[in-house]
Length: 419
Ligand SMILES: NC(=O)c1ccc[n+]([C@@H]2O[C@H](COP(=O)([O-])OP(=O)(O)OC[C@H]3O[C@@H](n4cnc5c(N)ncnc54)[C@H](O)[C@@H]3O)[C@@H](O)[C@H]2O)c1
Image (cartoon, rainbow, N blue to C red; front, top):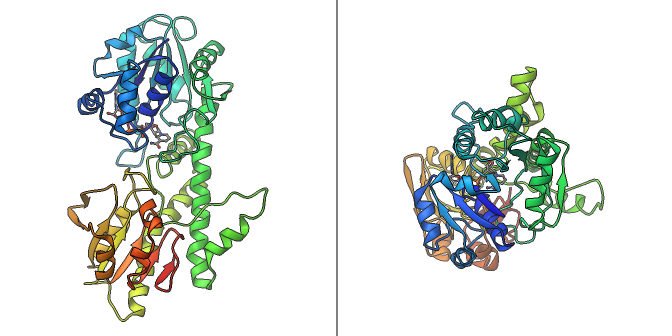
């Protein structure tokens, strides 16, 4: 079987890897020539695969290209391009439309096209199908079309592509069958949906569920502090219930390419077609977006208790990625937090094992390399992400005597205050 994976990022590259290792002939297609050249030279640009994994991938026969002619040789083409929001917070499907238009130009009879990018229900049938049929081929007869939501969790060492069930919903039953046949070669369980809309909506339910539950615990964190109750202990107690409860942790806010963005795709569809708000999403967004402000206020109070103003204080942020143990900074809550702290006049520094060079707006935030020395020299420390090296040697942070505001709930000590 020949497969072309369009978009070689956090989603497409692990997919290309898993399919190649299963014996499928895979070509990766990406507009970014730097990514293509880097991969062909054995260099990885994502956390979940290192350079050795890329060398092993190349040894299977995989190659990357920017030339779409490869589509004509494919049995299956899988689209894994970004689906961001535009400046007004509306879905921006430009990459999906661009990739699909290119595929349509090279599409031959018998090919299966699968969309993995997260999007609003209806995209596969309303946007992709007409674009792919523009040159006269008919979906379900000449080519096949399905949606299969991507469920990758960067940095998760337990659940990877191969052991996370894959949902597949085709425009026609044969489309579902063809897409399922592809995934079944390297995914332990393929779950068939009755159509693409249900598969598209399932992904948005998953992400909205996380968004809403994170907001719930974040809102509780805000008022628990005022009530003098330790929210972290509350979560620890609640999660001893073996049924009906899944625990979520407070944080400095949500980040990444999924949780802060995807639910808006659904909210947009509900508003556009039904002229009504998706109230849970709007509320969750409001609460999660208020967390950096909450953290900055807590920091202000912490310094105030020590007769210090935030203005002029040396504040050290630890971990500026959107979650622990990855280098992805997209939508990281560290950015709104840093923006606020800078506007309040503090002298900001950061440390992150995998981020070297960090700009917030126009400001180049200064990076520290000697963690223990920087902790000792700071007026306050804010732990935004509990990266593994911090947990391996917490003393370097908490033993410095400098007050620590911990947004991760993972650190203990006399100088530590958890949000
Ligand atoms: N990253 C995640 O953890 C994650 C998880 C779940 C779902 N998703 C979804 O998966 C999709 C892809 O996300 P990602 O994180 O892999 O994005 P990414 O930015 O890491 O990678 C996308 C790649 O697509 C390429 N590209 C863009 N337009 C193209 C085109 N027209 N033709 C060919 N290549 C093109 C880019 O150059 C880039 O290399 C998004 O819809 C996202 O919401 C991502």
